Image 1 (cartoon, rainbow, N blue to C red):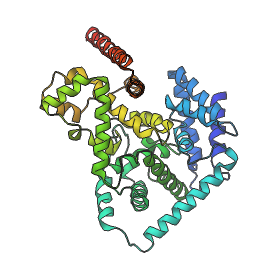
Image 2: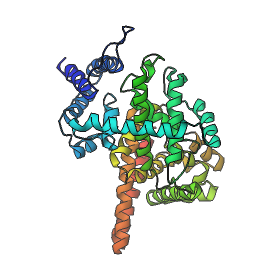
Image 3: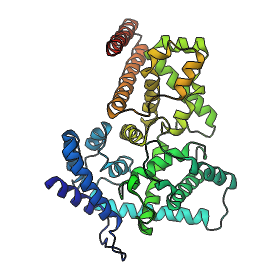
Image 4: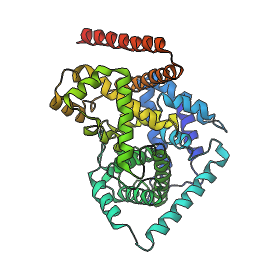
Length: 402
């Protein structure tokens, strides 16, 4: 019970003071969220003691008057407990300051700025009709995998995405709206919504107008900052940026498993045929809601300057995960598999393994690039031999498990 009391106290301290019961007798959103967190923590405490210890470690970091950013970043890289993920993302993205005494003031300033933007873009109804029309077409088709309940049928949540995406496309200097952004925006909104209430438990009247307004502003800013980390290939010319991104993924695959790439070339399998969606939707269509959140924990912990690079390595690792099967497939079979990867039922362990693979591939490529720079041919050969030995060991393990 001490842990539950600490969590409840922490949540209440973060929210603005003066929250009261509504006139209809229901609890205001922070209180609802606290109640749900208590139930969630009880479940964690009974089912998984490791997760309980992990949550306790995060609470210790977050409860300090001044949060140690590097400590939080390091812990978050390995995955954030869902109970505190919204706050951790906001801090790591730089939206919320580490100093608790400035937190509320910073939130109020950013939220006020967002509502100034909404007034400037919507008060005269002078909208970019083509952009808004495409957003309106895409939002109803956005259904994240693994999402229980019907919260996305709520018009208010749809309007949050609609305004967020439109204003972002108008304010964005390096690209405009494109299909796939609704999936990214929706993922961000649902994570931030979970601060108030679990999306699966959401009902239309659960959030009051003020909480909806705050959720919208927070979604816009966090979505914008997150997308800034991917701006290296979301450029004015999306085709050029996409070509560069896919070439980067191909380069990583070639470093780790050149024979697989040679097989792709013989069969005519190209990255453009299956990986464009991975770039545009940031894997939101390849994994369920929980797995995407876990992957994004690491992306966000990587920081703005390394986020997109790690995404490339993770996409390459996703291909390499199935390399033994892919080497036995012709063009049609390989393309079908890559376009419909069997990741829907992945468990936490498999997602963690994928992230680990991406980390290893990045380190291997960095070392090879450095050795190439200094002309250390012998060391490069040795490193490639080590990678090949790892592949052979993995093949043996796979056969034993089979």
